[in-house]
Length: 110
Figure 1 (cartoon, rainbow, N blue to C red):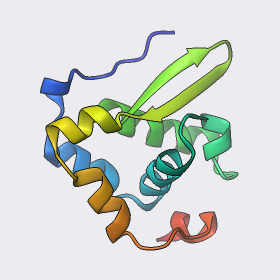
Figure 2 (cartoon, rainbow, N blue to C red):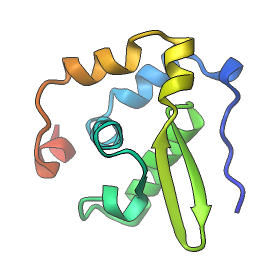
Figure 3 (cartoon, one colour):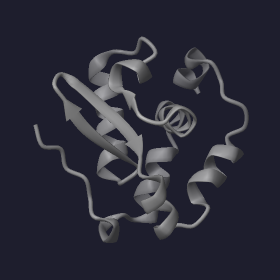
């Protein structure tokens, strides 16, 4: 299964900020920043698969994450180097500004 990942030149600031404005997606990005490559299942925190598929698609299509398929696993990683080249300091600033990591139930509601 081939997934769409935009070229660096197609990545727009407003789309990245939109993706990071959602609490669930921000929690995914923070976990990937902390843990590195993770499967969709490891990042779901018990949320419905359909909801998580939407969040991963938004993050992927705006250029924040790269997803590769290995068998039935979808492995996600931040496009940190590419984003840093396009928007220096943005991702780290957003992660730091979000404050301490919240529990998954808090992230989902807020």
